[in-house]
Length: 213
Image (tube, rainbow, N blue to C red; front, side, top):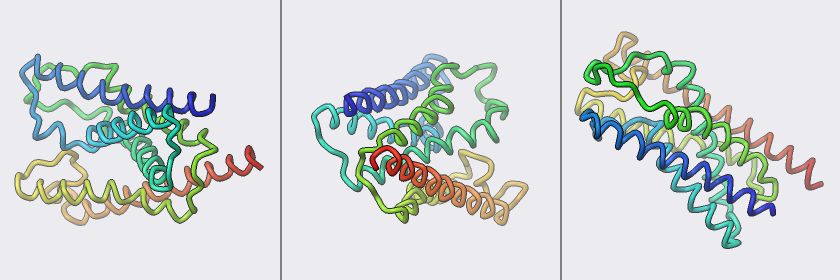
């Protein structure tokens, strides 16, 4: 029952994320405004695709009674934290940002946007926390949660420097805040990832201690 519950939840989140990306892509193609070079540059979309594929794969793995390893558990923590950050940053900084002027009066489909930025982050956090029988990684493993976002940031800055296009205003060194502002945002986001990482992992360990004692 335990593995079945977790696998069902993982598959639901993973399919929801991948399906949402497909929905957005097909809708923008239908409206003649799909710009793949830009769309697939957003952290929320990269996270949705990678986390979605990961959750579907490990969800099927649980159905086949393949136990999560140490590195799977670290990846689960990293993706759960990444999805939480996607939700928090979107609602705090990006939800009210105006659409690209090139999109005209186009409006994003509501449901897939909510799945990626609201429902999936909440469910991914719940799924990670309730998996109390998972491999017990050490608390210092929270440092791994910074690898994924920092890799994305480095690649985004390299590409942005070459093309002068940035997926988010706060990583643009040519913006009003300048290079110093960009570095400040990057430092704050990295700290946010690490803080969430140790908080989520710490809470998971507390639940494991209380339930499995």
